[in-house]
Amino acid sequence: MPFNLLKYGLSPEYPVEVDLPAPKELKPSYDVVIIGGGGHGLATAYYLSKYHGITNIAVLEKGYLGGGNTARNTAVIRSNYLTSEGVKFYAESVKMFQGLSNEFDFNIMYSERGQLTLAHTDATVRSFRQRAEVNKHFGGRTEMIDRQQIRELVPSLNLDPGHLPVLAGLWHIDGGTARHDAVAWGYAKQAAKRGVEIHQLTEVQELVIENGAITAVKTNRGTIQCGCAVQAVAGMSSQMMKKAGIRSPIQTFPLQAMVTQPFKPFLDPLVSSSALHCYVQQTSRGEVVFGGGSDPYPLFNTRSTLDLKESLLAHAIEMFPFLANAKLMRQWAGITDMTPDYSPIMGLSPVRNYYLDAGWGTWGFKATPICGKTMAELVASGGKVPELIRPFALDRFSTFQQVNEMGATAASH
Image (cartoon, rainbow, N blue to C red; front, side, top):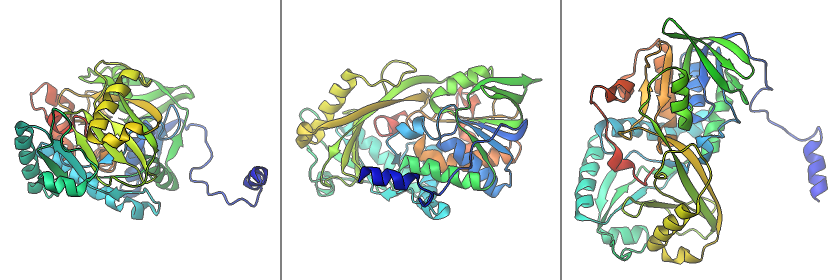
């Protein structure tokens, strides 16, 4: 049987749909070069080609398509942030996620399941009330719920885990998940249909800057001229900014996650606790995913560690004691580009025609659609920054106008 299946797969009768054209040689020049072939880079290319008619675009990916942080994140989508700037930005992204499958004619497996964030102290309850009101003000569906409501939502949750009993919860109805690989391939397929060139295994080694403006990029496959360039390289943002001669406030930390064997469905919402530094969700296949905060030391490393596994699983078992007997299938890590205020860096840079999409830390996947849309508007307008991303400018760190989201991002992603 396996050999018959292989024979059929290799036969001319096998129906193969080619999502991406065969690899091409790099052209001498492009109107736009997008550095990074993950969700953000591909989304920017898609919106440029669909809504602005710009198709002479090269997306350069040093590895394989969507193989960086897009492939390593745990696919959480939410908008229950702390600041007005963050709530408005991510709420727009959530709305766009809801319509992506229809827009692509390609199932991204979006699932609106809600997110429950646990409060273990009176101070956290007060903070959550503020977040709920900010979210409601900007149209988000977020509310405070008590222990009885939590028990009804998640019957298997232990509400009295030792020294940190659950007092209340922040219930974010708009929270959900989507399949990250499907999102990346949906954007790639639609961008390629419109003439965008996607080049895998193409590493940008040097940026050519003349008279304060970018003019070309040097890759392992040759040098190409460009009218402008968009940096969308996630965890490697600080290194790419260094190539452009831009001083960066970003520090890079590993971020780990792990997944168990499949269980029968028992957990619909995503459950997180910043006090326990842990979040838990169950996938559509029944696997249980655990994640937490970033590693405590700056490092460019995607190796998983035993100490993180031990501490994270201990906290997860406090929340769901029956998982103590679960079998762990795999553990992995990505690298996160963290900013001092836990908000992204988007928009202009000190180098003319070089646009930044960086500083996404642990919250990049959920911003994929709105990031692509706003970066496309920025590029197509020749540098006019959309109002929605104006607060995330690089120069906010020198003008003391940070958008502080630290309280809304810890262990929630």
